[in-house]
Image 1 (cartoon, rainbow, N blue to C red):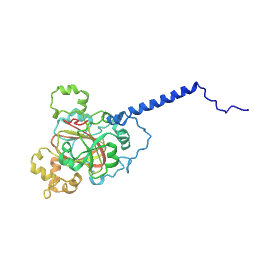
Image 2 (image 1 turned 120 degrees about the horizontal axis):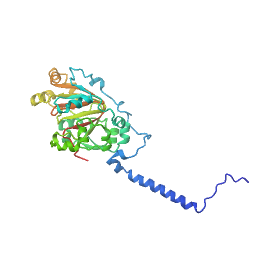
Image 3 (image 1 turned 30 degrees about the horizontal axis):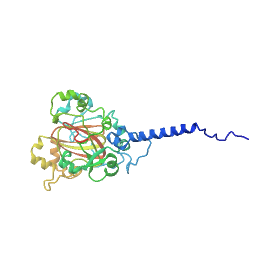
Image 4 (image 1 turned 135 degrees about the vertical axis):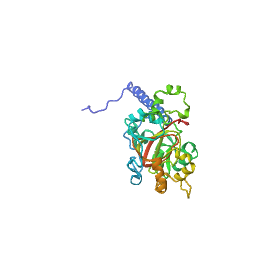
Length: 342
């Protein structure tokens, strides 16, 4: 009789060994599950493992670029008589220390080498940082009150919830400057541009200079995410830079010296007959075409397009409004700005 395919029964000495191995493996899995709990992921999602091959639901548009955009209506080519800003290289920005001047500028190719170019695509942002909490608000109201005084307007949501469920709702916008971005997100934005990089690399030396907090460039960044036509209406704040990672923005900037005349400021930024603050796209559609207003902005301000990779510097006190052209992801650094919430 042929016994070659007959199973050999386990001996008594083998059984305890296999049982111990089984218990050891399950204990290892349990420990791994504990250390990769949602709580630790929420603290710093970059420490959590994720499945690169896992299919993720991304809604109606699988990429930022596939979403609706208003390029035909709001884009232009930054002609000199419309935009009029100096367009600099990173080297020119740093050598000229333009952040110490009172004139806006555009700096090209600032995101070269950033991990964010890979990690912040729509799919990767949702996959890597689903539980990072952000502040979602009404873009028009944020412009009217200023984002730092809009506590009642903000609602805390996760990045995944905002991107998949709220981003394309009317007026929903992420721009909470008080929240601290996790280290993993900040690392995606390295190297920082100057002067923010100076604080990160030489914090002690910068603090020894004795500058008041309100004039110090710290290494706190704020994240902004919004769909087409979102953006804050006219507002002012301390000197700041804005970098677009994905998407496009249109900016209207108005000289700080001209807006010292409050009557002129109201006449240029609001409808005199019906003095309400319009949304940014409606301001461009309805008020900007008027001859006096267009001549004023183009003579004493700037109408510019900021594309992916561009840094736009806004000096202290300049009034400005922004319109997203397509789904847009950006980061902001402001002089004196620091995280107020964990």
